Amino acid sequence: MDGFLVQILLRGVLIGGIYALLSVGLTLIFGVLEIPHFAYGDIMMLAMYTCFWLQVFTGIPLFLSIAIIFPLYFVLGSVLQKTIVNRIMDKPELSKMLFMVGLSLFLQGLALFLWTADTRFVKSELENMYIDVGGGKISLTYVVNFIIAMIIFSGFYIWLQKTYMGKAIRASAQNKELALVTGVNIQKIFLTSFSIATVMSAIGAVLFAPVYYVGPFVGIELTLKSFMIVVLGGLGSIEGALLGGLIIGVVEALSSYLFSSEVKELSALIIFLLVLLFRPKGLLGKEVRE
Image 1 (cartoon, rainbow, N blue to C red):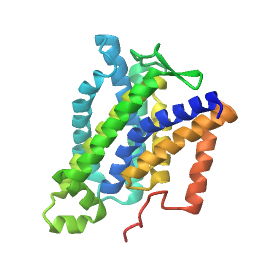
Image 2: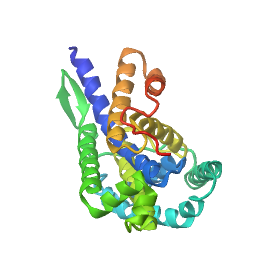
Image 3: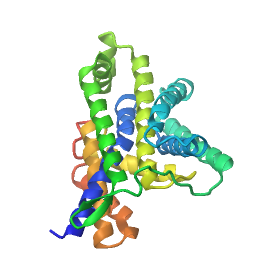
Image 4: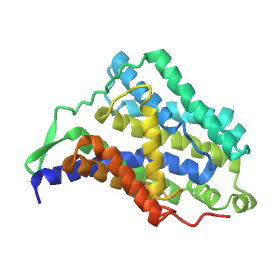
């Protein structure tokens, strides 16, 4: 196989792993809270700005900023769930959808007002370091960020599988009424799920920022990509989020190599539509509960 093609495929896998971490929080929100979180990418946009300004004002290394962003965005997720999300849980689906779209537009407008439309870039301490692959070079930033993303993703998956809270979240996602009967505090589950989902998206955004850009409207692209990955893998499936992220990453990388960078989004969308055409539940999706 052509060495450059190997390099492209590896780069697709590396970015796909970060995509998976970006979207797994949305999977959790879909599975437990069942709300269309159209402001999901805008939360990531705020996390990218947080990382950028931390670098500007403190000079803190990119990876250490995760230690600050983790508790900060857990608190933000908790506040949003208690003050906003919890109030719309019992509203009609259309009302929830319109409200979340409104929240998205508000956050975009706020970012535009505070920081203007100027494009900014987060720096990685590894940006000038490369590894040789197939006769070419891949930035060490991609490799290290992928490893961190997979460690966090694996830790999250183990937490869901092994801890009492994780098991309660999975039980609530499967059947909320039965979970209530068995003594699960469903409101605590909602709060924890939304807070953890916010943290996962924020950390994913920090790892994604050095290979992308920061701007007020980047959230739109991240929301669309996250929805695409979650639906492709299967709503509510953690494994599906990983598979969907890897597929989208590889498809984008291959289409850029075989055609041009301008068609990579279109190629990913075509794959997404084809999968839904032949498997509407997604690749690893389960039957929808009545």
